[in-house]
Length: 188
Image (cartoon, rainbow, N blue to C red; front, side, top):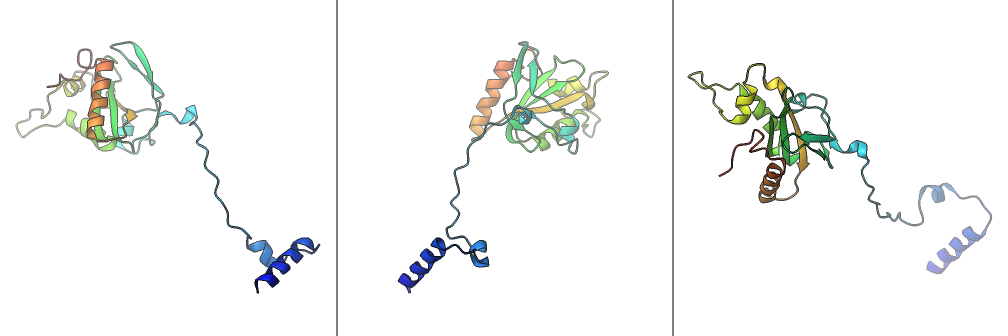
């Protein structure tokens, strides 16, 4: 059978006839995928992007390509494409009234952590006292301030284990000096 089939294929290729339906529908060879070329992301996709205000974190945020560190007067570009779906990330909180109030933190899920921060500002215990008393929440309880003045966004998403996430948080806190001139508290 093989020599006959081979002769038939040669005859079809060499002859000047139209191809039949089978030859149109079925390939003679399988498709060989080519390697995908890694293209750099466009600048328009970089930075922090909100989901349109559907989650509490995005309701307290706005799209950002860069942010200003008030303690050092440095403007830092956000070099990743980040949304509220980011996991294991370093986030930034600032006050929209007095931009000197800035806070850095780390989290495994920014949606959950953003909601926790917003709710912790007004959380009371059974005696009517505030449950959380640290510099961040006390700032947003000042007269003329509320959780509506809180701006939350992600600086970077970290790929690795929790030790790398902690090291990146320490790096950003030191770089932005948010312990001395911000709302972060000293570490033990």
